[in-house]
Length: 67
Image (cartoon, rainbow, N blue to C red; front, side, top):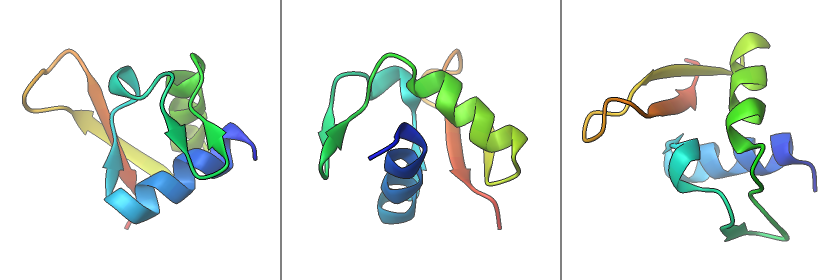
């Protein structure tokens, strides 16, 4: 499964993703690699996700589904 598919499935299931906290975690039939931040930014550029600062730690970005 591609990283983009993993990210989209994770966000649909959990509502959002914080890439800084996901590297190395397993999910479904794959795992999030070190390129997870790049994948989220690419999905944002494609218009599938939006981003905002992660409230508990503002230096991190949180990605959500675009409504």
